[in-house]
Length: 345
Image 1: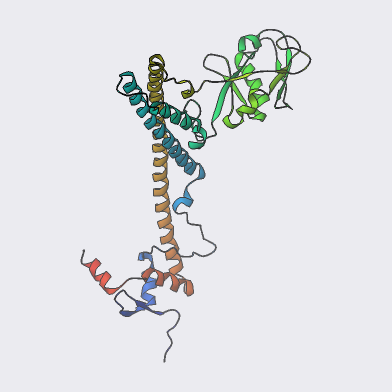
Image 2: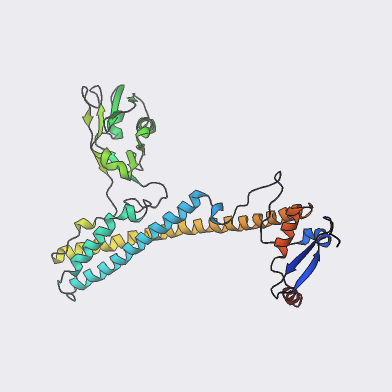
């Protein structure tokens, strides 16, 4: 019995129909550049480049953006549904088409509970004004006594700041400073504690902090001056006032006609606010989906080109890896399948 030489191997390939046929390895080697395989092969170690496929190819921010937008949209659509139902119930009660059976009051409580769960239900993507962001939501607030007009007056003064019992960098105020310079110095001092400061649209200092930390900041901000703008001596507590939330269902009243009308008006406004936020989140989600499609198409093209290049490189090399690549390419190919494909020509 003659053993085939390594340069001209014969491979037995079994098709779907059970028929076996001998395949000449030399011919396959010559046709390697035209071979197509859906199975990645192992390229030589010196040229190996990892394939990127599926969700593993998505950057983490992209996955976070999609997940965050979907969570926000779920919360907003649930809120919108409850508000529409509440609007209908209020209108019916005012028109005396619905008796006072407690259902309306239960609906108000239900929405209040939904609103209180905003941070958790939206994954922290919606702030109290229903602004959407995949970064941690922040609470904007003002600080009593720290308005630009007050800080701009007087001579040079060094303000010692403390937050939560921790001493922060001092803020030096000097005559002739611009409003932007004042805001920047407070921002530099408070940023290490997670509090940022900027000029608001109306030219006042606007403070912001992570929503989860605001409760601890509210009553723990303190300042000590030299008697010009702030008292000297010991630290003086400053009150932080958060920006009013977009919705305030806790104030909705249903006990009399006047309260019903006021509540109906607020519900209508709340619904408009929620629907506006829904539109914004859907736009963000559409943009993220566009990025997904672009990334997927790029990955698919790059991956297939790499598979083809790897196959050609490997098939040219005699040995086990070449045989493995060829048999993988021919796996599942039968005479019947080839014939059926040729009939399409």
